[in-house]
Image (cartoon, rainbow, N blue to C red; front, top):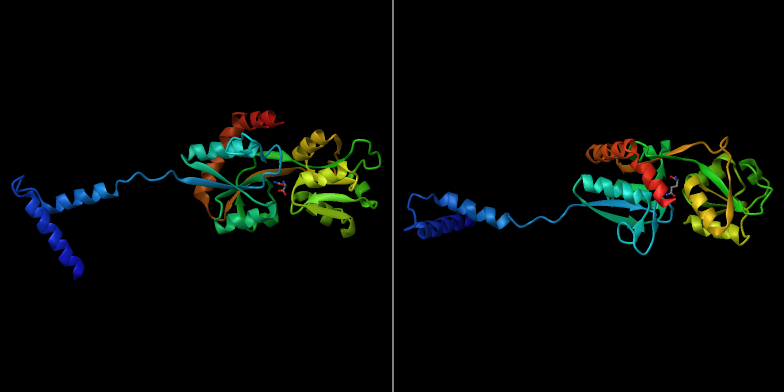
Length: 270
Ligand code: GLN
């Protein structure tokens, strides 16, 4: 009722205002015009939110002058390309690796770009893009270490560090079945690698690229065991059923892979 009265008042006002200008001019058209201009405020740039754990050099790490604020790395470069192709602003949410899948599921972030390995159990909670990088696990040991030459050697009462929830954690825990009392779990690779450096731990099992980067920086060495450490594929995780975003991501990844851009990023950050 009230609404109708207001409408009549508005129409009458419009009618009065149009008298003397052009009497055939429709009031309705005039009020439509008013609405259009009222709604025409510029819309803010849409955001594409990337969840990551920025302690995984060379894929994501923090630095004083990164690609996006303090964030830099191969994954940040890839995510920027994705955001650019969607005409969106890339926003990065840094969190513990362990919280990434839940953040994708609840929509706190649009995608997890975190050197994340495609695993069957992860596929139960999220959808993955096409793989964009192949890696494996390595063992980081002290530069003078001679008694750890393969994964099996870790089982002989060695103190082993891993990052909580990473592939290395499940290999040490479930595949090698190392005694719990010999496993140290940290939130960041650098923390356990430091412990190898200062002698608190004998070894760290971690992703190959990160392991090599951390070993080099800390004067440590890397032991490989391709028989035990199978290759794994990194991909981007999105909320289950978000095919629209997944298709945009896959399109960009395909382009970046075939143009050799991802390799270029990898070399740039190694
Ligand atoms: N690739 C490993 C995993 O998915 C580690 C990834 C990471 O630490 N960012 O578990």
